[in-house]
Length: 299
Image (cartoon, rainbow, N blue to C red):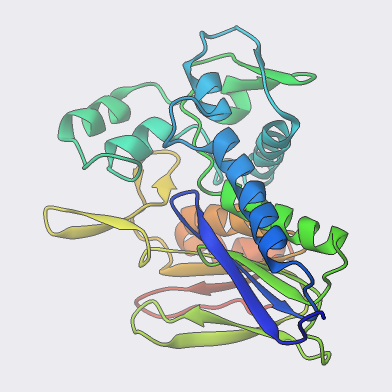
């Protein structure tokens, strides 16, 4: 008989954990678990910067001007990333992989020599360094693409699409704090999603999510310590170094988790201008500053 209790599926991928909470009947938990794992693993195989033979790293390693055949999922994410870069005037930037690695956010400790090399290298934004074709892409300038500000959100969307295709319309999908609901809870009530207070081990806000996505970028979850200073994993696109004077956290609501993820990353990079940009462009966002918290609440 189908189960009617809330059930949670979870696993590891993309250097973190994924989780699906189901509020409704599930007839084949083991099969669904396997399909969810395969869904996020596909994104990881294509877009990982940890694995040298991922499709993304193949593109990064290809000579400038050489077309590289890529899977449609990766091309879709790259196209969306370029669109967000244009929309945010470069605040969202994918061509920062050399800086991300140099500062120790991928697979090594921070390296002063690598940091100096990354800072000295000419920095060409992805909007000018990357050209997309039909089923392929090529570099028009050296590439070091990093999709950490958009790929997890996309993977959450793929989980949500999988559940919707199975008729599971009362579920909440999550990867590393990026979430999307495929509908309300079974009784019609919304899912409660907490946003952490960056300065305390407590919730700052609770969002009611019924159908859509929410993503948070912050300086308190993923960071490295250099000479006693804690540095956020979000990079300043202009400097190729961790952000200075950035918000403590930015939370964005959007129809898809990929867009919420990318826009939260972009608003973090905007620093004190983030709240004004969100208001002007109708972005549903909560921007928290450390000194004096400023917030633009969703409407």
